[in-house]
Length: 175
Ligand code: NI
Image (cartoon, rainbow, N blue to C red; front, side, top):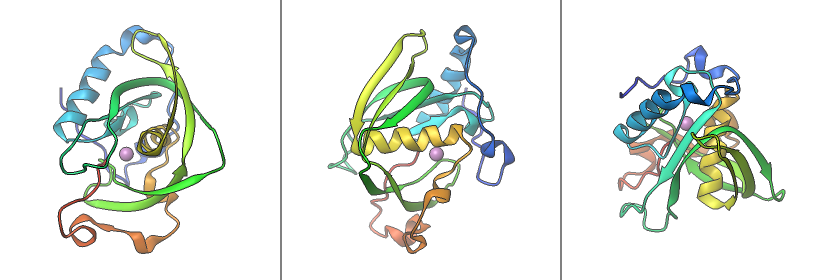
């Protein structure tokens, strides 16, 4: 079922989400998140964005002719995630968010990281990633701490409305 996505300003987006202990109760949440993310054409979604304060995120990005240089990211459900940077190196990149519609901003993120967590069946997942994949994971996991990407922006001259920033219509993805 497609759910309403909470928008920045809603206090539920600022909560620290709770760890999942009962995986068997998650399947309808994950189905709803997937329906909502696909409906809105997002690159990722976190459970708090639909008002569920649990440590569940999903993300995925297929080849898209609008962004030929963007590397695809496999569709992933990640429960109780933990992130570890693999170096101090940061990278800046454009981000958007379904909870901050119509806007984009440049956000610094760790360039390379390892993430661990569990899939819906409770199987442990561990990956080392970089670039856009690493960025999406950091953006989604920030939602579990009540952090929205504008809170991470350092240079507000690169934050604004999509139509003004990208008049050619090549705005980056949102998660
Ligand atoms: Ni987001």
